Image (tube, rainbow, N blue to C red):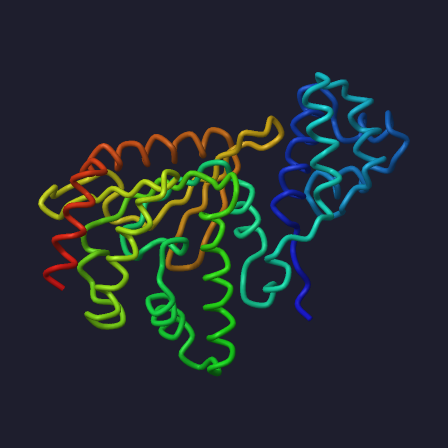
Length: 281
């Protein structure tokens, strides 16, 4: 069995504990001495190489002295790290960190220059993509990946769902992935999705010409209400996805997303545009 890496919660906890140490003006050696631990133990916790117990986290927070609301939030995060989500059942086909971020986020903003975002894909559209990405997979493996993607999609209809703000390039809507019938159904599914109050969809039309970030890959911003959860950016490249948690870099990603969104049609005009393309398909 493939060893799973640290979850999004564990990475976030590690990042916050490291930030608090630095804010307290302590080196790893000084902090480890204050805690009565070895330096390697502290470093492993701060790099998400070792999962700390709730008692370990409480001890660290006692030494660093954060404000009470943050202390309570981090202790809750330490308890939640061990909680298994629905995605654990699909760990063989679905990156747990991405699914966990998606599940926990209060707002997801995404720029998609090539494909419909996974949370908005129909089963046939998703199956076409998965079969194309993994041409050597057995039919049952493809089915399992499709099932995982459809399970992800259900989060938009749950109680207290995240807000999804999606900006798409017009090219995404006109490319007949799976054939015209499949794509027509996908476009109708997008029109159905935007009837939800928590889903926003806007389109950057081709006639816009140049737009910010042209020539780069897609971007997903995971944003949270919790004090202990800072925003995370996920960038799609030809070599695979990359997570960015550095505050400065995430802020730059947010600025770029907003610049792309400024080039898009508004929600009503975007819906009319999608409807027209569906009729032409």
